[in-house]
Length: 205
Image 1 (tube, helix red, strand yellow):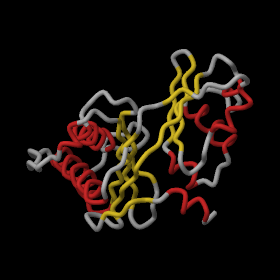
Image 2 (cartoon, one colour):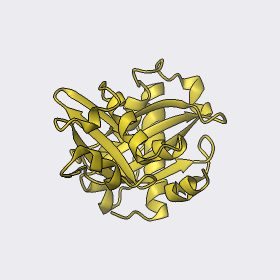
Image 3 (cartoon, one colour):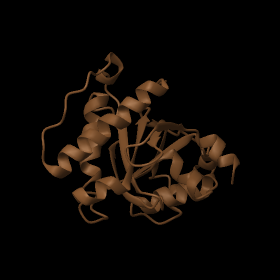
Image 4 (cartoon, helix red, strand yellow):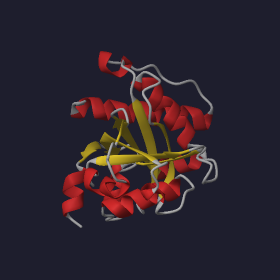
């Protein structure tokens, strides 16, 4: 998976358009979609308050169920109604930045002993998805970078996101998947779009 910067910019523009149309209840403007966006792919849309950078919503689809363009649009609409926050208002559209993460399919981390899981997680590159019974939790790669977690902390946080105990990743019944993401974000509301280089951000910690 590799998307050019112009495709990343388009992904963010599609998310912004879907978000604004959904919030103000108008029809989406049509955008010319390249072939790559018709391929099924998982995607997340993250909204951050500007300029504080505080999270305002994050919803997405980890599995490649939909064409990329649909994953982005549905995730953007979902982010406006992230159940952890009040519904996004039209007044807030000028005060949030839009970030799109385009995901690779989740890959089960297969280890002989659960304690070896941490050695298989590359912080700054991998995101994590945890599953045990009905419990599910996912953290994007950039979250571990933002909080300066090591691999074990990242695994624990993913388990807690799933509603499990922090050490549930040491339980053989827990399945841990990893995936990668290309991340593109507005630098300011409706502003220029840049590619986020997570490994570089990690080195800054």
